[in-house]
Length: 240
Image (cartoon, rainbow, N blue to C red; front, top):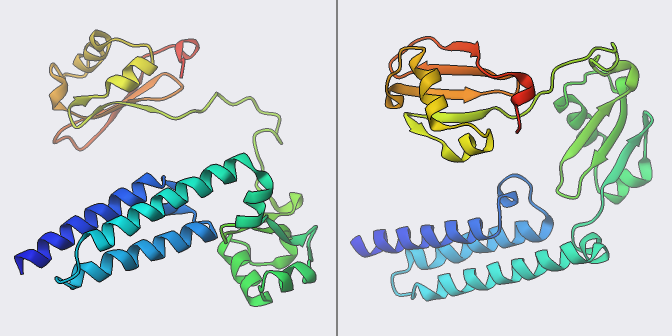
């Protein structure tokens, strides 16, 4: 039993390393050749996991081979657009200017039920509100409403809105995020001073502290049930 447990752990670790070696895209968006690799890795891991008589290398070495093949194919795809199109395909327009493209629907083996499902998934009930539908190479269907039915934006109203970017977490569970602190071109003394203004003499007492692109700091202490938000930096000094 212990042998099976250890083999399972080792094969799980090997599978995880193989997936990480292929990059993050495998988790969220699979191209056809990537889906094949994922399925084969799962099969290679499952066979030695249950069969104690099968050497672990019979599962690990093929995984390594698949990772190498994936790396070669990915490199070729990045270098050659023609090879990338042949391997993964191109985006296909299923609906253009509110008109269903029958030829493309048949070519991609999608029926009207699939199209209506994609439209409803996009939050649109009435197909007459749809302007464009695109089937991506990874299998995702993106639906875009007509201009008359899309949400009003600040640009439509000619409004000037502040720049919005990714907030920088500076303290997570009492640990200073030095990389983000350097990115913001701020010092640890500055950070400690701002935290002490809220009664946190030691940053280990801080559960979460982040700084947004409007120069506002959000801070919450460990064991606290409320957060504090205050402007601590001029907008013109936001550099990330």
